[in-house]
View (spheres, one colour):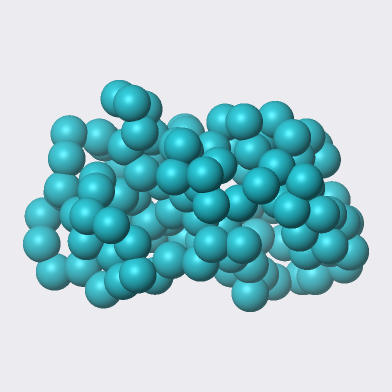
Length: 129
């Protein structure tokens, strides 16, 4: 899976709002939460889809998420905007972190990275620790 992290010192990199970024990330996470992995892949950015074949995403998402069980809660921790991200081409990114609780993992930090793709924020990275 694609993993992204950033240390940001600037201002908002593009015109998306925190609320828009949170709503897009939550909508995408809802697909993953409901085991709609093929749909989450289809809703991901073109960059993600070009680098991660659909079946690989489905297999990895199942391997990582299903042992955790259902989501009990998810709270937004941070929303950060950036143009450059380490290891990624320049673009308009939003990096969101959530504190989440699952049936089989009481505390987890989920990171969702979105990129502006064809005028919409779309997932380009997802990581749980």
